Image (cartoon, rainbow, N blue to C red; front, side, top):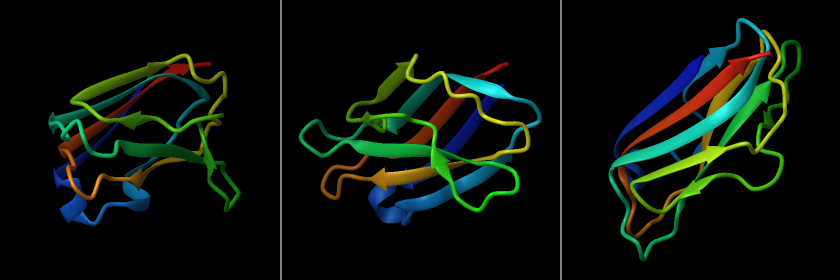
Length: 122
């Protein structure tokens, strides 16, 4: 299963920094994250701060959201970045999965961001 978020425009101008950006997805089964891909159509300049994202799970019946990343949140300072093998966490059926944009470079942001989370059924 693939979950995709697309955020059009220059990120520092879109006002997307914050919690719960874009679509929320409700899982139909139990899944384990297998890969995360971050891609810009226009990459941020190399001298700026990286874009940092977080993906959260809100389990059915709970109000708190919890990051799916056990340690460091993924960031991207170029056109594309791929992350694999960061977690054995099982995302529960009926959980809501959402995207946060935690940091955007104020001076040299990227443009047109795609975030793709690949999930394997457990």
